Amino acid sequence: MRFTSAVRKVSLGMLFLACLWSASAVMAQDVIKIGVLGVMSGPAASWGLVNRYCAEASANMINAQGGFEIGGKKYKIEIVSIDDRNDPKVAVSGAERLIHEEGIRYIIGPNIDPTSMAIVPTIEKGAAISIPYAFSKKLFTPPAKNSILGMIASYQAGPVIYKYLQDKRGIKSIAFVARNDSESLNQRDEGVLAAKALNLNIVAASDSYETGTTDFFPVMSSVVSSNPDLLVISGAAPADTPLLIRAARELGFKGIISTETAQDAKVISELAGDLANGFISVGGASTPAIRSSYMEEFIKNYEKVAGEWNDEAGTKVYALEIILNTIKAAGPAALTDISLFMKAIDTFSMPNPYLKDNRPLRYVGLGDFTQRRQISVPMVVTEYQNGDFQTLFVGEVAN
Picture 1: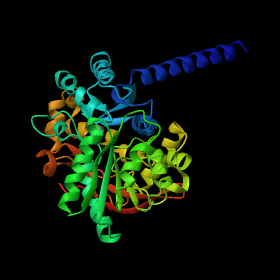
Picture 2: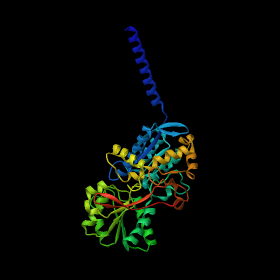
Picture 3: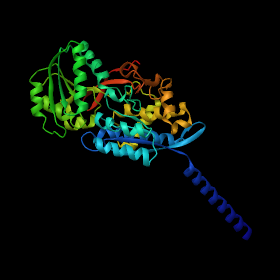
């Protein structure tokens, strides 16, 4: 009995030590920290929160498989998120914290031109790379090199949407209304240039509204009175979009409404309902018809993190995926030396894990930026109908 008891004690002791060793091994696993910096509060909160939820859901999937392998070693992925509140000053302090306090070299975000431009000196000085969801060409055109566009730009999607509606719906006239900030006004100006190139009749292009507006009837009354075939709401934030649509429809507008910014179907459904039917926007880059099984798995994990699916996540899932795989291609030293990451950009290519056809996932942008500073996210254009987005067509940036 005493012998058996002693053996049992030894066995339990060995088991305890084994557990301690296993726990310490997990704790000792090398970690890659990835930053998420974006707007996570206020009317545009959906944009930054989707970035965060995508990164967290993807990290959970990777960590559940033992981590991400680089140079024969597996790393745990840790996501560090900061809300920049759509404020350039807060974005700068957030970038400084991520780089200098957290030791992060790769940042997903920010979400608009002012915040993305504001952090450029910080990421350049701190030897970091950001993947913003902003459209200013200054971010991606030489001498700039530390920013990589994470989605389809408005000036890439706009001409494609206008041409489609010109050919398929017979539109001949177009009007623009924009939020009065640099990014939205820039999107409007790019849209106007695209409309001119298609010989569309521009009947309004100077109307704007202030950030924080809740009564859109005055500005929409002016635009609707021009009676365009297509009304473009440039740079519309997800919380503003349904209110803009509702105002236009209740003022009697019967034409098509579109935007080149990603939107939230649930918010549109709650605030505009059937009045939004026929609304056209750039959607998430993963429609049910083209999703791979890996994408379906990601969607389940995203829903666990966020509580529900957001179509925009089909676009923003790409950031973490391409960051990690480019580091892997460049080698372990690229974890801290972004110059190696930059060298790998031009030749990097892998099968797109989120699409059935495994088309290449790579860097593009030569045509617009004269250098590869854009992720080759599929261009999915959607139409809102009865509470959800339906796919109109799928395209891509050529080079």
